[in-house]
Structure formats: C-alpha cells, structure tokens
Image (tube, rainbow, N blue to C red; front, side):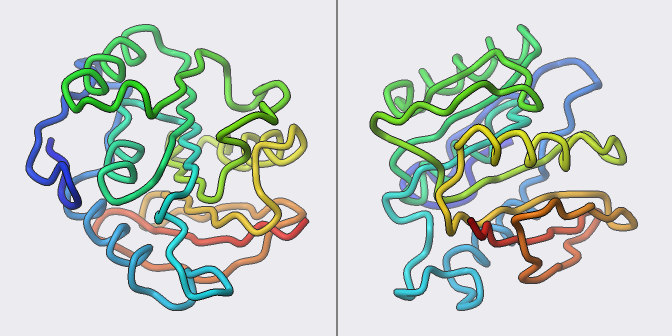
Length: 194
C-alpha cells in the first residue's frame, strides 16, 4: 500500500499481517479523496474541503491508511480508534515512518464505547472516515456512540465504506448526502445535523 496523494504521495504504508484487517484499496482511496477535495456537495457552506486544516476521526483504523491519506492531503490532526494491539503497532510504525506521529491521537478503545471526546485542541472532528467490518452493523453503533459522546462537530461530514452490495443504517442526527459505488466498495456520505 502507499499514500496516493498530497505531500506524502507515493510513500509506502504497511498493513497488519492478519486476515481480519481489510484496508481500503488504493484505487478506492484515491476516488474518495478526489471527491472530498472537489465535489461541491461534500464541501462546507463556505465551499471549502473539510480536509483543509480539519480534524479527522477514523473509528476502525486498521492500518491508519485513511487517516494518513487525509493528513497528507491537508488535514491538521487525526483521531484513530483501533482495538487490535498488532494493528496499533502498525499504525504507530506508519506514523513514525511518515513523520506524522505528532499529528495523530491513537486510542485503544472500542469505538462503539468511545468515552467522552476531549474538548481541548484539536477538538471534535470535521470529517469521519469510517471503514467498519463489512455487514457487521458496527458502523451504525459506532457513529451513534461517537455522536452521543461529542466527537463530531455539528456539521461534520461522515463517509462510510461498505461492500458494493451492502448498505448503511443511518442513525438519527444524520442525513444522506450521496452514495457512490467505487469498484468493490460503496461510499455513503452523511451530514451530521446537531
């Protein structure tokens, strides 16, 4: 795997060696970030990408690929949740190799039970990049819990990746902006409305 765009374009990243982690493939990541940077429907009311200086939340981090891609493309900070110790070691190794260790906060907590959000800098997330295990239902649980605990800004943008035939149960407090199929994945974009 590699970073596909931004200041760290082409830099390699590693993934956990187990078969339970399914990193977002490079082609899907590239399409996703092009949408985040150029699609008017996914911009802020001021016409700005949420990546520009934004805070990213990566609830099912795995290798951290989505967060590192966001940081490479202009995000200020990323919160990563990962319960697997081996995956956390991979994330920290990737962060060191990419000189991004100061720009991430890695939590070993279950994102469906995240605890209260920190209210100090960098604050709640502008953008959630969620790639839960396919067909698990965990994405809806996690988003509900993260909302309840204050992890999201009132107008945060949420991207949920599911398999192409899958769907995402949208919890209260979010509206559907759009859905796009990208190869083997479906990307669902939601707007937080609190």
